[in-house]
Amino acid sequence: MKTLLVLRHGKSSWSSSGLADHDRPLKGRGKRAARRMGQELRARDLVPDLIVSSTARRALSTARRAAETAGYDGDITETRQFYLVTVEDLLTAVAEHVEDEHDRVMIVGHNPTSEDLVEHLTGKDVIMTTANLACLDLDIASWQDVTQATGQLRFLLRPRELPPVS
Image (cartoon, rainbow, N blue to C red; front, top):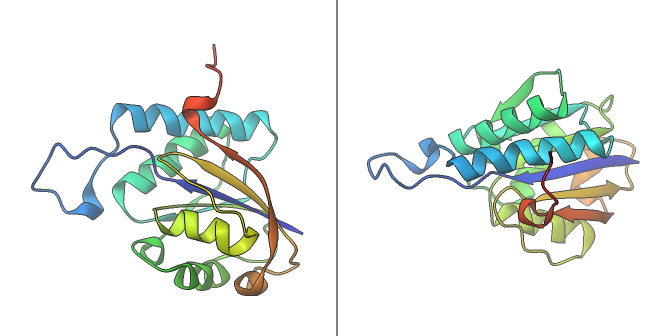
């Protein structure tokens, strides 16, 4: 059994019209939401063994903030293979980047791929707005089998629905 945490990047800024989409930063709200998801990971004892993120600035920033707040002490693997891809491409990238020693992996990426991934693996149609976190339990022993995996959606968290942390 493996656990896959799917985190969509936080709210990004559109204020700099000259920036390429890949280079857009997080807004303040996106930064706060990323930290809030990290707090939830820690509180639920779900700190990942490995984090793999899209190279897009907003995704990496989300991953770093969530990781720091959660208490994750590993490196964040960066891959452009999570940026503007299909579910099949994303699953292939996971199989390539994740070793079987990792039982709980968080991937940080984009929509519509995040929503499509959850539906593909669980059969559940979900809406993942910015900084939403889905926790999936996958009935696999090896990440090499993730392309054919079936799983259960344990929960979907939305920052705006969580109680404030004091």
